[in-house]
Image (cartoon, rainbow, N blue to C red; front, side, top):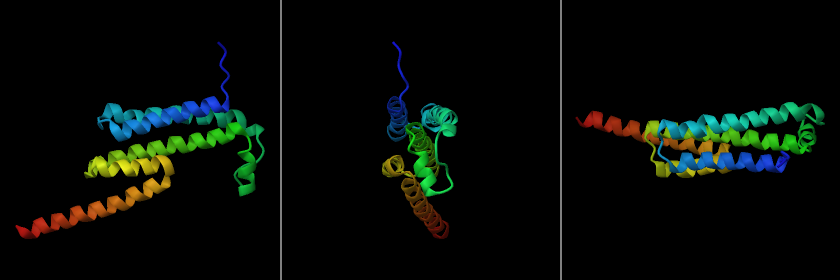
Amino acid sequence: MNTVLTPDLLFNWAGQAAFYGWMILIFLPRINAFLFIPKYIIPIAIGLLYGGLMLSHYSNSEGGFGSLDDVRNLFMNDYILLAGWIHYLAFDLFIGAWIAKRSDYIGISRLIQAPILVATYMFGPIGLVLFMFIKVMFMQKVFIQGQEKKYAS
């Protein structure tokens, strides 16, 4: 069987890989073996796909990164558009794994982490901003509680 690697097929593969990474982050225990998959394995694998797409199609595409019109023209090529999407998938998953690991380290509940991770999966930077906000609020609470214990004794 001769399978042609069309943009649609590669889109589906990359999307499924990212989806499984997010499911691991949200639902599985955070042991290193599980965390290694969404933090490194999947972002590297789809990052390599991104690199291959850019190397093989960028020079044949019109447009570039100099202006919004250049970017629009660049993304008229389905392979470059796919590469752009894979760029999002790889970076958002890597950042999601970082958020999960940092949240565990500072003690943010998995119930609070879940919506942050879903926001990062769906809206990238919004999830990161939400994490940063909650982290600051959480750390303030921990600091204040520590001060109260310090002065109570």
